Image 1 (cartoon, rainbow, N blue to C red):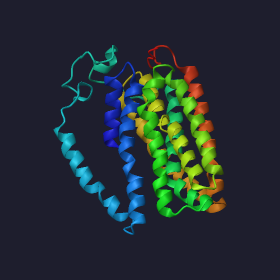
Image 2 (cartoon, rainbow, N blue to C red):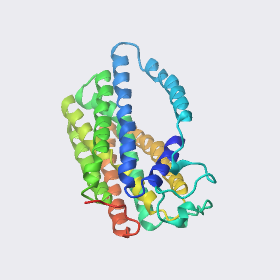
Image 3 (cartoon, helix red, strand yellow):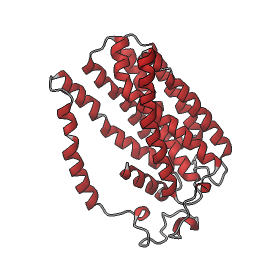
Image 4 (cartoon, rainbow, N blue to C red):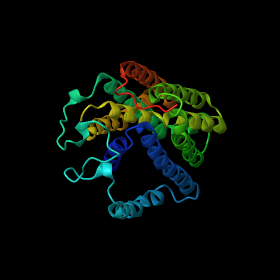
Length: 298
């Protein structure tokens, strides 16, 4: 999370003309790597090894990544404060080059707050689906645990696909509009998953839902960061607080509902979150000014 927080703020600063493209592509590459997780766990369970050996792989991977990260040169947008100067990649606003930036919450306009809420709803849907799609599939379709665990890869694969091809959409439509559309696509995929009684339909629903859900966090957060009038890293701090809240609260809430009414009924929480997120994105789009709206090249 610390790496994501630093990298995302740096991407928005460095790619200030089209921040949504940069943030979404970066998240797409990360999600593409994430495809290996559910597939490997499903294979481990099917082979009789269980999930523990697969999870242990994260330890050497983390060590390797730390070594690679430390050997990488800092980019111009992410050099330590006091060592950086104006560069051609800097945005044309002096506030990003002063070295001492105010971090008060009043630097985030109304549009930023609405897109922060939309981002929170998107992350909540993403994690609730990832956490609970497996028991929903096993209960409704009769799929085995190994098949259901591997099927979650369809959701992650849909996220990776939409993120990696998002540049095609952002070249034609405003990212603020795409956030609203993405909530709609997520809801369509959820409906297919929720109604499914056979594994192929559930997997298709997960893939469609993932394609919509994959755009919600990077688009909404990059728009929110673009609207911040002052420190981007301070605004990124708000993003991480919202992200942590969504991850920590909503899957747990869905679990409480599942205990009370069953996982199938509890999954009705997903379209409610999508409706709230779409409404927040629409209100945020209405508040965007030409000065704060991300650039769209037609």
